[in-house]
Amino acid sequence: GTLRPGDSVRFDAMTRRSELKTYLTGRRTVMTEKDTYQHESTPYDRAGDDLAYILRMMMFYREAGGFRYTGLWNDYQNFVDLSALLKTGRAILIAEVPVEFDRARGADLLDGDRPLAGPKDKHRTIYRFVFPVEEGG
Image (cartoon, rainbow, N blue to C red):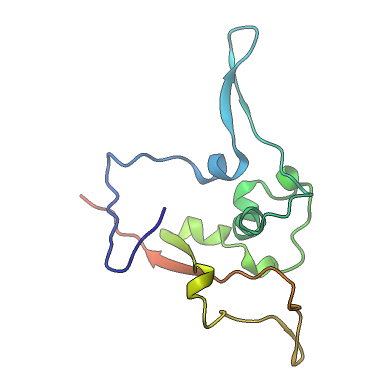
């Protein structure tokens, strides 16, 4: 969704929830021909070029099932994976800056002092905020 300046979101017992792994893998429960239920996941699209899709998997690689789910190793930029923080009682808010407001361009990846990105490369600025979560009564 979209949060505008000054907006807030409240989560409580009535807030619809789903497991992060379910969201990441597209897992759903289906009825088989034998009237039993089983879980099925959408296979990870290794040929996909949707940056949001790729970044989601990089940011929660282990939580999604890692190599078993993606069929890919997470050696390149594995520091992006925030899965371990999910077990620490913290919430992770991910925000993307709309291109028209992205004046600062976030951080550039460099090799020494040379930019790794070219002028025709796709660009997105993603902010990740980690907050402590207090259990409400």
